[in-house]
Length: 626
Image (cartoon, rainbow, N blue to C red):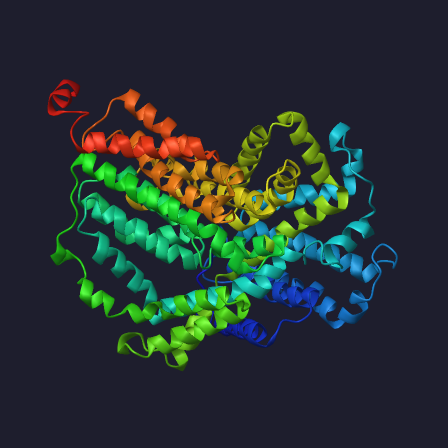
């Protein structure tokens, strides 16, 4: 990404601020019609890809070459035409009215420029996937066997991706235009108001003195920070630069410190209230209020972080690592006096749960963030700070907007060519009507897509291909979407391409693969929970009261069972056979059968009491193990 100077930097600053103000206005007073809003959004963002991101790695990073200015100008032409001719486009009858030569040329230009922008901003994988699906729409009828597609002319392909709301300007881009931008600005206001630093201080004050304190600081701060930022890699760099050196200071190996930060940062995207762009897209896919997605995601997110905390605690006890001294940490009372900084977040959650639109709730959250900033002189936001906050949030939109627009090409190709039905048929033939095998295959698809794509793009593609399969096999639509969403996120800590683990290893100075595999171990529960809530809707708090309570009890017991199994320690090291027993007991805790679940919970409690009272692993046994 370029770091610009002088007049160009000033121009781009005000360009981004104007874009942010436009989206705040439409969030408060209502969006334009869907297609038009999306056209305006992409036309505003797309030139930034050519100005901020170089064509080649060898291009200058402090200035914009003339050809990138030309490409930036050209990228506004297709959207400008669609805006000025919106009435004509909106009144067209698809596949009846002819595509004019101007529309054909502009649609082709937009497709090529969007693929290049995706390559620059997001990376080669998504650009290649979208390019292959775009080519499949035109040449798919030449493919052999199961892959053979329907025959479409070039005007029909361009019409679908450019002149309708089922291609580039489909629902994923609509989420970026309506929701993501205003929530990014909300995050900018939180940062400027001092809430970001407050999250870190809370984590330090209340977890820093316990066993493995710095690791718990990383978990808690990444949870709080990541629930707003929605980006695993950004979360790693935002909190890891502080927490990883602290972990290494008290004796954690570098790879372990990096793994803790990676797994903690990745989970921020499943932690309400914001959860990144993917959750808004999920709500749109399902046609549900965003609050329903928040409620369904809440307990699995709690399980994710509780499991990591327990793993860290048990690991610290096993290694004899202590926390930091109180003198090195913020005073709890001083931190609690700044609890008013949470008002914007609580206000946002209250409005979302009360049925207000996410856009309106985010605007009110922005206003509350400005109000709380006035209390502290060091964070008081005047006109300049307000504009800076808008810029701070809005400047992060290119990766989301362009990924959503490019993913729209894939979504459009799946709907136009019927490729989704072919994929469903393939999965059914592979799984042979065994739902668990289908879940495993969709998990692999989601992980592979997530290894090279940002979470939003990976989720959109995995949902377009995998969710119809799971729904047809009898799983609920909500569970199916949450399943692919989880594994799109977990791919951040899954080698060989674990982006969050690699980012953390660069800070820790550790081996990336070793860091990634340790992150998988710490985040092991994240590989189990999606399978569990597909069979037990109580984990998503979507069952009866008894079902929800049973799911909660079983899941809490499973956290400890799997932690003892993976770390091999309960007040003392435990042998391999006992670790295996705990693993089986943990699986029982997640079964939908109430009797088996009860057996798992009882087994976990009984084992813990036996160890606590010294009946198992007595000192003599420990001496033999040594």
